[in-house]
Length: 261
Image (cartoon, rainbow, N blue to C red):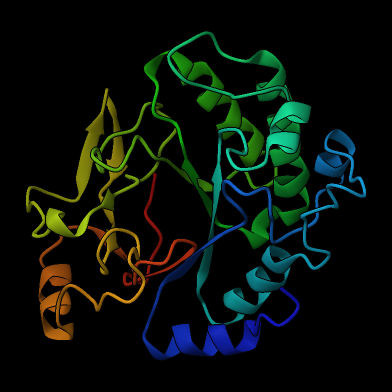
């Protein structure tokens, strides 16, 4: 993490005219690209399980550097338990979701962790893309997450991912733009307008497009389309497009303005 070249990434994004960077703070492994005192308190490091959190706050470093060049920052995080870290999952209170009863202990703990990130990040982060909100019966939990994330930046734009096969859906009305997670086979895109109805609220249409196989697996696969074809398909979208080469973690958006709630 200490080797991440913030200035170099900003230069690359500016050179291609990207409007925002979407980057993961962490996912299923329990490794995170920013420190979090609440997480370390709830999941105390041990000799057998040392802390998996970065000492460098990459998100805090990225925000101001991007903003100097007029580029926004969207942070990817998840609502669910650390699937590949049994120790952390146990300490946090178990799985957060599924078709059974909500796990109140986990949800309360994870909300504290999220606030410990979002509040000091403040306006350095322009929005959040939350992975894992797939279940209708957990909508109150997702609404609480939205309030927690906006406690750092009340104007933060949010998107809650309803799943790989439902790129234009959200289980909560708190989504300002569609999650858009779309497999390669999802091209081309519909052309029926910039806005998507979400049970009476409007989400701005956005696609998060995987350009290499299935999220980069296998990693040696080439991009699934030529550069010209990618440009052609992107320009056909009546909304916003974020492009990922396939490897999970980082995407750059092609539009130059954030969606409006």
